[in-house]
Image 1 (cartoon, rainbow, N blue to C red):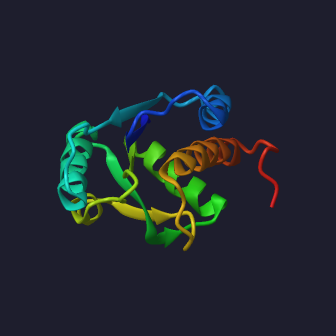
Image 2 (tube, helix red, strand yellow):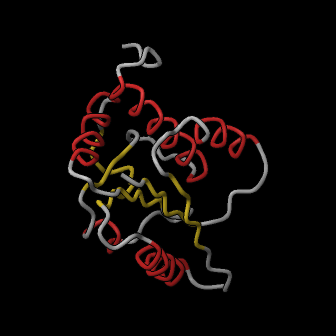
Image 3 (cartoon, helix red, strand yellow):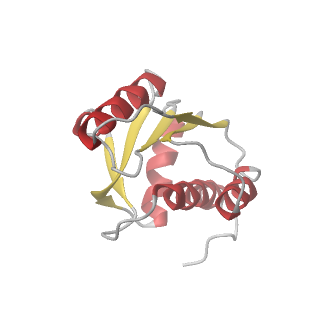
Length: 151
């Protein structure tokens, strides 16, 4: 199972990158970030559509597609781990899709296998990256029966 996070924007040096690197080093599954960026000045609607197209192009074709959206389904860490475990056992690759500041375009959500939320609050997309990488690591530890996760 290869895990890919397809996201809008480049993560610069700083506390978010430090936290991502901390958890990323611990993840044993093949793992990568694919960052896309639109630099042209566009209206909000045009920008969201262009970012959507870039994300769709960057997403591995056969991967399970999980769109991150505040209106998505919330899962406990255990349920999240169970889902990842099912896909891992099926030999599926997984691609998480995180939009930019304007969120994901409908095209990214409609074609997704799962629309996932970290709760009703709106999170900055850079923090969603951190939380997602931590949850992927936590899922790995839950599936391995390691003591990192404590209910």
